[in-house]
Length: 409
Image (cartoon, rainbow, N blue to C red; front, side):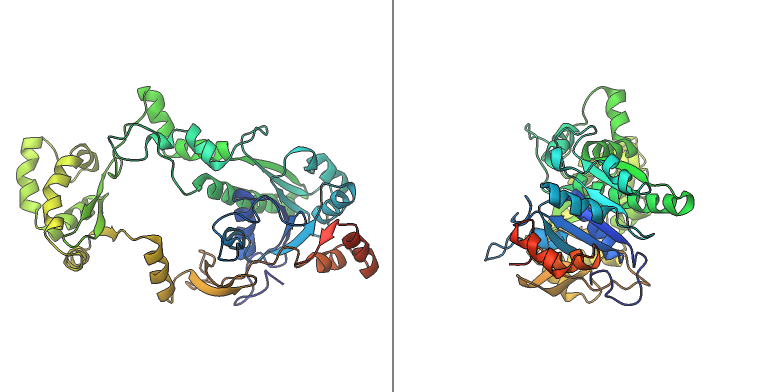
């Protein structure tokens, strides 16, 4: 059973979570719990939900996306939009026991199980509902990101149109808030015996993150958006530099020590010491480095441009400067797979075959746990209905005949 493999007992071993969610936020939250040992049961309609065939896909059209976001879970294929299927889902979500009665969903409309329905069966149920905007208005990561101003900060300094970013960051952050909410609610239930009804909205998550960074108040105080600065690091010094042989690196100096190391690596300490009086600046100060970032960049750029990557890397490392190479994703995954200590591993994913995937980024005693494959859609349908709900073979067969449940194809 997923949630029981790996070295030793993991912290959420024995916890049962029912996840009725699709796309990124809900499934990533459920997977975070599964990676820590919880038995997470993902519920999809027969044939799969809206994300079952989502790209990227392999050569046969099987979704690498779906497999990646459901590692270590069990799968129940159930038509919960019917009264009979809804009843089964309700029974699973409110299953008795100290380690059960935890339900995570992002279902909208009439198919959604309400908290009132859940508490009527189990008053101490823990229910975490993920939504686009607070109150239920539809939204996804990409629409939320557009609405909070990030695309107007992204892209080259001279670019006028908004630039979307590829990573659904708010989705993943929302999933971690959902997982944290479940753990907090479990602690509360253990302490008081009471359940919880929690909701997490993508738009709230995005605004919270920007508020925590001080970005919202900055815009509020100035009354204007922050200008684009291209690849420069906001509020400090950091930018990309091409090397003589066509590579590109980013060098960053957030602290005075990192600034000193960068100057030592590039042999420019005397140049900047002579320049500071003319600029009326103290470049050991982060704010002054940001104000004069373009001047600093112009002075450092020839040093990088005159040297091949290997020399640049060696000199920066010897000085203990803060830097990193730019890689494409194909390079990144191959390097990670070659690193025995990496969280990236190759495993056999049923229906796909060898798959480069990841394990939990939380290491136990410094060691990452092996990744667990995602289930085939409906792989655990019969076992769950039998073990968790006590249905007989005959009763399960009738559900299959009626098209209410399905097993793996």
